[in-house]
Structures are given as structure tokens and as C-alpha cells.
Image 1 (cartoon, rainbow, N blue to C red):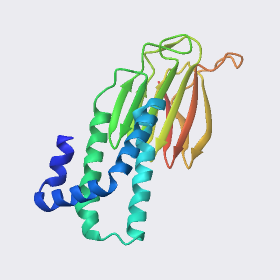
Image 2 (tube, helix red, strand yellow):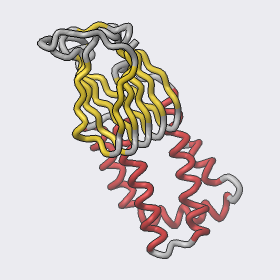
Image 3 (cartoon, helix red, strand yellow):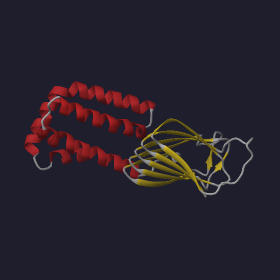
Image 4 (cartoon, rainbow, N blue to C red):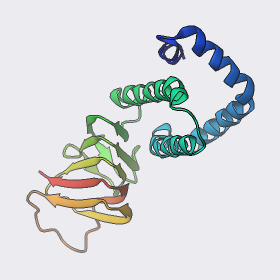
Amino acid sequence: MAVATGSFLAGDALPRTHTALELAAKFWPWALLSLAALNLLRSVVSPGSLIGPGILGAVACTALAFSHGVTTHAMVNMVAPIALVLVGVGLLHSAFPKMDRGRWTSFLTTRRARAPVEVGARTAHPLLVARALAGELRVDLTGSCTHGEAIMHATALLGHIRLYVPRTWSVKVHTTGAVLTRVTETGPRLQTDPGIPAHVVLHVLGACGAVTIVRT
């Protein structure tokens, strides 16, 4: 909160404080409603899942503001500083690792992640989640072993996910939720028994992104 307030007031403190108070007096019910909706979403989905919809919502709100005659001066003094603060918060969020090592998010950055040693349905990490939002995420599964199928949800929104798997593993890919998203496989692949289920079941969701499966 201190970072956001300082960034907003920098350079023109008194007029911006007056503007902020006027906006607060007008829109405080909407602010409380938005806060309640955000807390409800956070209780249903993980915070990282809100980054992509947040970007789309910000773009839509900006377009609506211009179409309804909001002045450029107001956009520069209000929206631009807030947008910069949100981008900074997103960068900090993706820079520090989470306690749950089975979920990773890369936002406007390149991030490397190593999967837990044991993955799969009968482990503490039954579901792996990888998100690349206008960035690159590299997930290394080469040091992992599976106990049952390991399921991964990969979301690439204007981003790139590299998944490093052992060459002996089989990967089953589902791309029903991918739009203009390329999924490729590189590296040597050893022949496996077609009757053996996939070690990794990869569900790809994305738009204008890419997912690369690298066999090492």
C-alpha cells in the first residue's frame, strides 16, 4: 500500500491527493464491491490465475475510458501510475518462489522451476500448474519420478512454456483450450510400449503462446 500511494503521489502530490479523495467519495461502494469480489475469487482460485484475466480487464477498461471521453490528462495522472504499480507487483509476485513447488507463474519475466522429486496422483503433488503470461517459464521434470500419471495444466498467454522431461517418458497432450498456441516436441525420444499410460498428461490452455516439450 505504501509503494502504491507513494508512486501515485510522486511529482504532483497535492492535486493528486485532492483527485483521489474526490474519486474515493464517489466510488467507495464500487471499491468495496470489487474488493469483496476479489476476495471471493481468491478463495476459489489461486492468485496467479487472476493475472491473465486482470490484464484483459485492464485493457478493456482502458478502451472503455477512451470511448467515453475520459481526457488524456486524467489517464496519465491516474491510470498510468496505477498500471505501473500493478506491473511491479506482478513482477515481484513471479520473482519469488512459492511454498507450493508444484505451481509456478512467470509474468513478463523468464523463470526457471524444478518440479518436486515425486509427482503424480499418489503423491503430495497430484497436479502441476505452469503459467507463462507474456513471459517464459522453464519447468524441469528430469529429476522427478511419477507415481501414477502426473497431470499438468499449462497456460501460455502471450508467453512460452518449456517443459523438460526424460526421454523415456511419454507425454499425452490435450490442446482443446489453446487458440493460436503452438505445441512442439524436440529432443530424442525412446520407443515405449503403447499400452503403458502416459507419464505426463498435459492440458494446454493459451492464446498466442507456445509450449515446447524438450526431451533430455
